[in-house]
Image 1 (cartoon, rainbow, N blue to C red):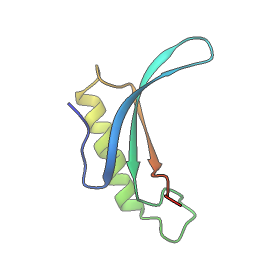
Image 2: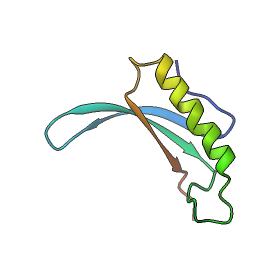
Image 3: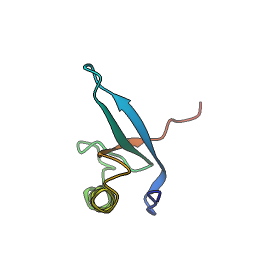
Image 4: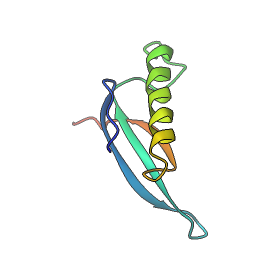
Length: 77
């Protein structure tokens, strides 16, 4: 089951490997929200809703991913 949310533009589980060979599965969530709390455009409530949805998805899909990260999409130049 894939992660979907109105505030997420895309999401995918990516395998990662650590320095000592530990591998984890990371849910990468791409969003257009401003994630910097110091920014004037930062919306704490919306970022919190997306984060809570990701945590809930992880609790129901423990075999899919171990943790999540939210990133902004790369801008086209």
